[in-house]
Length: 285
Figure 1 (cartoon, rainbow, N blue to C red):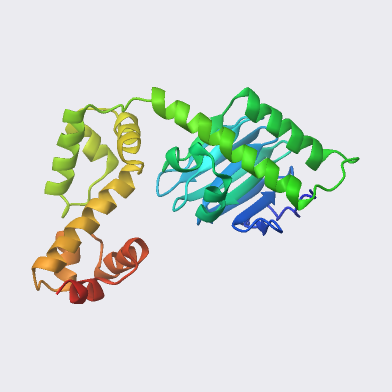
Figure 2: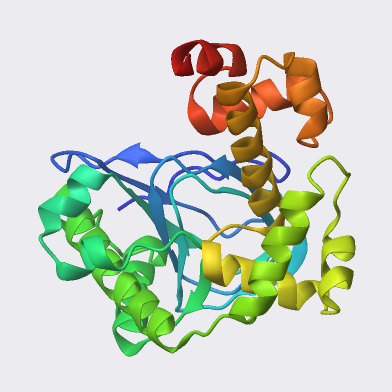
């Protein structure tokens, strides 16, 4: 297993390579230099942290926050999510795997289907994960290490998926939402009634008389979305209802649902639903 060439800091790493003989599995090995990782995940991704990485990290459309990825842990990044990682201090780097649904089904493991998370999770630690990281580190950082053949990469990727999703399931079993059902209903009602306003995280939290972090974490625990994306989904749902039920011009639909412009609504519609508002309305009719 030979490390891929590290790109200069400030440029996006997207150097995933297919694993020969393992359809639907890709891998990436970073170096130990600072880097910027800016990607829209097209598949579920597991990273094995060979050493500690100190970074500023932004998930989806949330703010960039300081985050330390601890050595000998795993990180899970779900399909469909976006992340920007500005890694300023990197010790040894990471090994990452991207898994298609086809490959996951082929593993025939109970965790492959039942434990899929829609939330980014970092610093997942367990003895089994530590052993996998130490093996990967030996193979990728030792001068005396022999290249790992594709079968060895596939085995490491499979075990990384199984052990990481086990940890996700354990965390899911003990995790409790930080918003009560009543508070979450109040939040939903407030957002739906004020979609035509320029809603902000601070404004929403103030309505519930709760800290922004509590509201943000509670929404993510219940929906798998950031607070920003939660509001966007509400706007899209409202726009879809108007498009189905009325002949309101698209610019007025966008304004009524809180989009900054008709173009903004069209872009998000295309990204989330795979069609434009006008085509959606025509099909619904």
